[in-house]
Image 1 (tube, rainbow, N blue to C red):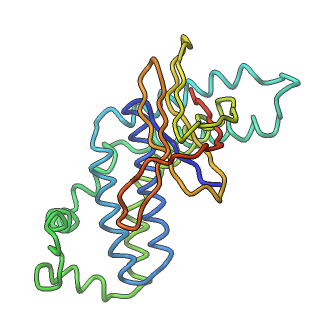
Image 2 (cartoon, rainbow, N blue to C red; image 1 turned 180 degrees about the vertical axis):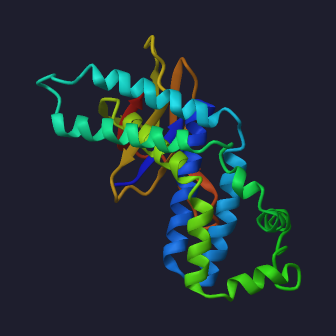
Length: 252
């Protein structure tokens, strides 16, 4: 079932971007071919741009501690699955320890790598990392899958604590709201928001056979969802039929 996440603030937007980029990096590393590893490296360098905020590490630690405090209150509650609660608390502790063990700014070791930064600079130019532009990069790609995997492991190691923390926070966020089944009449739906605690993200799920996708505009007062479809020229067109979908308003 296709799902769509829409963040309501820059913090959640950053988490979702890191999640997406990390998934692509890991997928391409596992694929193994030098073209996949080329894509993995360029995507890894994009992660550095996304996390280039000095307060991100502190922000993640504070959120993990806040979630730990909130969940610790639930210990002993008969309505809560004890094993699941213990698992998430253990995951929070492990992620916090790993983050604290990194004494430098997130990604600083990669930024200090002059060779990687030269690749990053050239990657901003279309076709800028061809073999005649960066011979050392072409040589690295030819070193073989095993060597490239070793390098990726070393480059990713200082970023993994951040990734784990973000995965935990997004997992909690996605499971935080009640899901409602709704209908978008003629492909459009609007909902007013009156909660004193504003949502931080919404999730939309549609059936596999639905031939349209949601476009969302929202603020603290209202959500507007418009479903569109693609014509052969890939130009979005308003979907004119009723759409059955599920909506979850998520808040940490």
